[in-house]
Each structure stands twice: as C-alpha cells, then as structure tokens.
Amino acid sequence: MIRKAPEPVQVVRQRRDDALRALVDSVPYIRFLGIHFDRRGDELTAILPFDQKLIGNPILPALHGGVTAAFMEVTALIVLSWTLSWERMENGVRDVDHWQGKHLPKIPKTIDLTVDYLRSGLPRDAYARATVNRSGRRYASVHVEGWQDNRDRMFAQATGHFLMPEQDG
Image 1 (tube, rainbow, N blue to C red):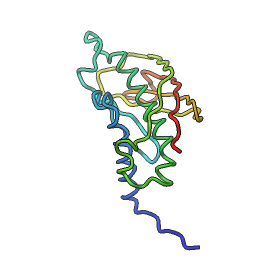
Image 2: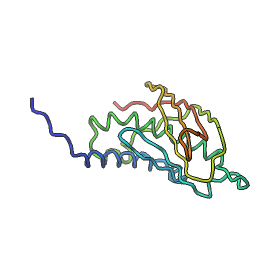
Image 3: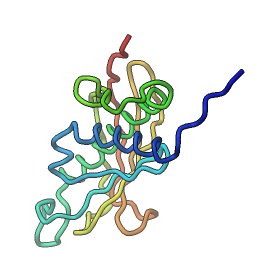
Image 4: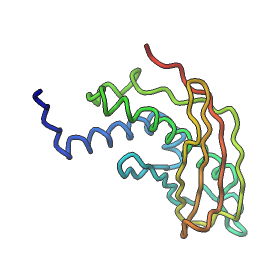
C-alpha cells in the first residue's frame, strides 16, 4: 500500500487559519467587538482587546456586563463550531474556498447562557477559553472561563446550551 505524502506544515497551518478567519468573519458583531482568536493546534483562545467603547461604568471603570456576556457567548459558539468543523476540515474539505459563503459551517443557536460575573472586568485585554462538555446531534453544552491578567483569577465564567445545526447530507 502506497501512502500519500503528508502536506507541508505551512499548507496545513494556512488552511486552518483561513478556515478560522472565515468562521469568525462571518459574524459582524464579533468584528464590532474586535474579538479575535489565537489558535494552537485545535485549541482556541478568544481575545477581547480593550477599547474605550467597551466600558460600562466609567467611574470604576469596568467592562460593560453585556460585553462580558457577549464575549463569553461568542467564545462558546466559535469554539463549538470549530470543534464540529475540525474533523471535517482535516479529513475531507481541503479547499479554503469551500469555507467561504454558503459552504461555511452553520453556527449553533443559543438556547440559554448563564454568566457568572466573578469580579469587575478591568479596562484591559480579556481572554477566554471554552470547553465542550457535551456535543450531540441536537444539543451541546459548553463551559467558558474568562480572565484578564492571570488565568487563575477569572473575572467571568459561563455555561451555555446550544441547538446544533442540521448536518449536511
């Protein structure tokens, strides 16, 4: 049996980065907030760069609670979508153009999201990581942890439940 030569690392990295960029760019609100994702293999870290427009209480100052909740939800949705797409992307869909437009994976719909505000979000960059606790054909459960300077000192955490998109084919 002749084995196909593996793709060069740069090609694989570029394909994954392009797919993630297409997924994130498909949601205008993510661009509005300025959220981007750092990808290390299949692990994603969401980054919310500080911007004055994100302040809810200028006296403290503190991040707006709605911005914090949106950051947690966006992190959960993108990580869930990325997790669902990973195997498909690696095992079949190689053409980045396939990830554009109508072929982009559908993002799950939020059923509910519970956010625990553990401390005020300070006027600085914030980070979040999500863990998919359960993912079935119809339903998924995701936990998100958000921090700023120290990963051990979370400023928010969230648990969300999501309705999964219908599978193609």
